[in-house]
Every structure is written in structure tokens, then in C-alpha cells.
Length: 175
Image: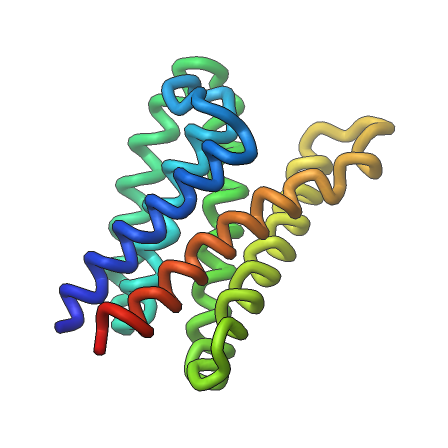
């Protein structure tokens, strides 16, 4: 039953993130410089990580995320080498947000409908603000303050996709 839940959380989370990418950023899934590519990649990696964190398989999460990161870092670095470093920052923020969610909030909010989704979306959004701050420190300019909240909507949408997948699987598939 847990394998079934892992499969459905991963598939539905990836699909929901892909739909968000289509709605907000368009059809450029083949361009590694555009957000839809990263939504698809982080949607898959985040959904898989969330389902494995919930099964308490932290070691598997680490191994799988290293493999996924290296695959996408190679693809991204073919375009711009610095993109692999930037990707690591946001990738780490996503995994840390999911870990904090599962450790601190998942069980406490499991009975409240839709609360887990909103908390997960807010957590990923906040961790993306921190990642954006680190990214801004790497490339310091006078525009850093203006872009500090630039990735909050992206993080929020990713977290919302993970949360909707979790709620849907918990409410409809796992029963």
C-alpha cells in the first residue's frame, strides 16, 4: 500500500506542477532556461522526496535527489555553467522545506482539511525566499532588494502542487 501511495503522490505532484507551469509560464518545457522546465523537474523531485520522507526513507531521498540533481545539473550546465550552482541552491531549499514539513507539521495537520497544503506551500515559498537571498548574495547588485521576493510565487506554486497531490492521494487513493 505504501508503494502505491508513493507512486500516486509522485505522479500527481508532477502532473499538478506541470499544469501550474503551463498556466503561469507557457509551453517551453524543452528550454532549460525557462521556469516550466524547472517546474517539471522540481515537481517530480519534490513529489518523490515528499512521499519518501513520509515513509521515513531519508537515505533514499538523499540518493535519489543527488542523482536527479546531477542529471539536471549536467543539462543546465550545458547552457550556462553557473546554472548548476544556482540549481543546487533552490534544489536544497526545496528538499529542506519538505523535510521540515514532514518532521514538524504533517502529522499535526493531518486532520485539518487543506491545512497541510497551505502550510507546505508557505514553507516552500519561505525557503525559496532564503534561497533567493543566497542567490542574490552570490551576484550582488543594487537590484538584489528588488528581487528578494521574486521566487516566492514559484516556491508557493511548487509547494501548493505537492500539497494538493498529498491531500488528493490521502483523501481519495489511500482509502
